[in-house]
Length: 317
Image (tube, rainbow, N blue to C red; front, side):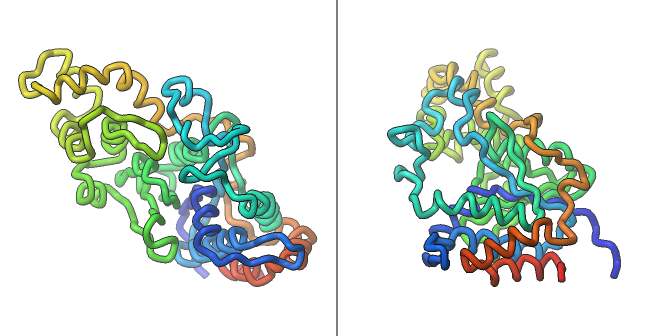
């Protein structure tokens, strides 16, 4: 069998297991614990590995879903997702207990299979993905699997980085986001331009206000006209006559926001990981890492078929 060409698959884990939880009918295993998110997440991994044949894989983790450095810059960042007691909310609702109890099972399932799970203290999974993309791009193609369009900023045709966007079609029929997709959908040329556009536009789902009166189309036009957010701000400071009237007033009024928005929107490229992330550490497993743990999870939670799908995709007998 010929050697597979190197390819790294980075999973936005929470994005995927939330989707699994709400998309897979509730199933209760023999232990009495719900397992729909676990089953769905493992099935997604099986589908992705079988279709894309990566040589390297990392399940990227939110060690901190609301990092202090982002909140200090923009206090409203994800503030609407905080429930009493500090628990995370999803779309205004506290994360269901039926999902919370499954997250440790997902952690154990990844450990049993030997699939790398990577987080970074004080950072979101997006930052882990940004750091690993920065580290591996140019050395091998990188596919980022997520339902979060914030990660479109990583798209880079020159270094073969694309986003497998699951928001509409899931992992079986995703949008494959490259620079042509960004140009067609948003009218912007590349990942960095997307980040600049996102800072101008804002994102209510993340508590980012954006510039009042500047929607997505106007933001995209400004970035493509001037080349970057920094260039837009220079044009304002220099009195560019093409920036006038209400648009100029809105941009000037948002000066304090625009001072900090880029570092909130931008994913980190230098997060310090909580586990080793060299080539060998992220390589697909060639054997089950912990057979006794996998057997226990399979029996206690009724996960045999899901494990079998992943093992088949990994070609582990």
